[in-house]
Image 1: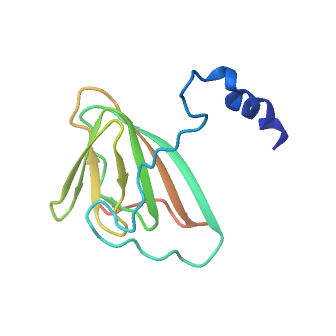
Image 2: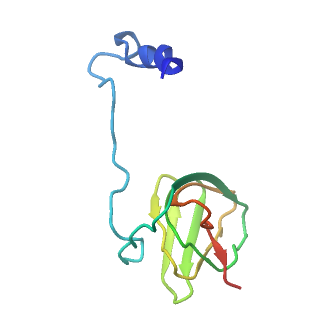
Image 3: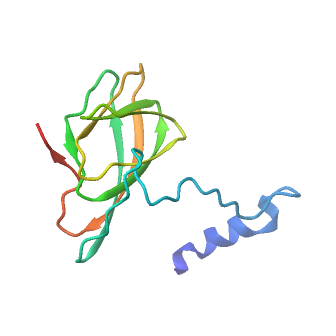
Length: 137
């Protein structure tokens, strides 16, 4: 914790904020028990918890392969747009700044239909040695 002390003191000193700005602003982005398609998220498996955070960049006109996620994950689009669709035809259009709580154990894929790279930061909450995704085709 000591290595963060100078940064912490700088960030929370009154000199870096103008009058009226709060020293800390917390903005909830998502809190849910359901994935984007409305399904209830599954219970966690037994075992050693493991958190993974990935920055995924999908180039324009790229279709990701059909796949599933055996663990809960959520993300925030930081650049571009991404269309997420399930094999059964449900579809979600994501743009920069939007969040997604991904489907679990349901076949789906992402497509970048835009003209710029799509970038998403994804947080996976699983159990050690469980794959983050599994190709289905």
